[in-house]
Length: 239
Image 1: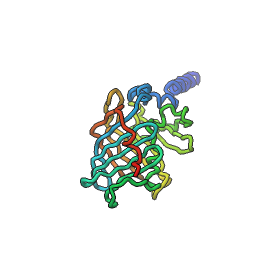
Image 2: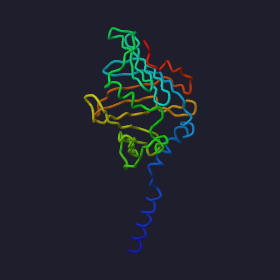
Image 3: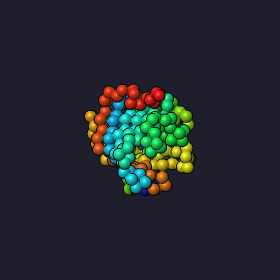
Image 4: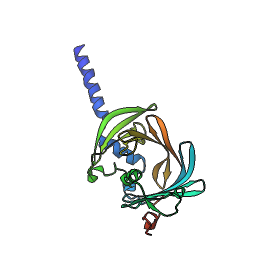
């Protein structure tokens, strides 16, 4: 009886060891499931069109991204075009609701999130960027079992990324606000409705929540990749 018990414990331990995954394996499976790591490395630009919903209002929007961290967001608000952009050096905006059609340097508090954005996923070739990852067990997200990966960036910033244990795709990214009234608090960005775009899988729905309350939703209608983009789309206009 004792021999059988030891044999059972040995077999269970062996099965658990065989099924155990490392953080690197989980991240690798994510990139493989969404198009392959070489294809993600080859990504040059993205253009996303859709709608943004926040504070009970909905707006049409276009989002452009280019390496290493250039970004531009055009939002139509009551027939007026509101622009927010970052050219890698200066974060700027055009806000006609402030009585001017001229580009202005964005206030630091608003600029910080844009400046922190990276074109590539921070998890892509993370070690070469000076980042580190660790597996922190599992967490259930709205009934879905997820692997929980802790990402510690080179500057000490900590993020958490949760991957579906079955499909291997990203379900939630958890990041802490650095400025504003929510500074230090973590927000969860839920991503879903993955669709293929030229061989890569992108989420077509994103919702950001703070303490369970929805802050913003983005519903994507179209994505195009690797389009040529002129620098003046992102550059702070010189007066």
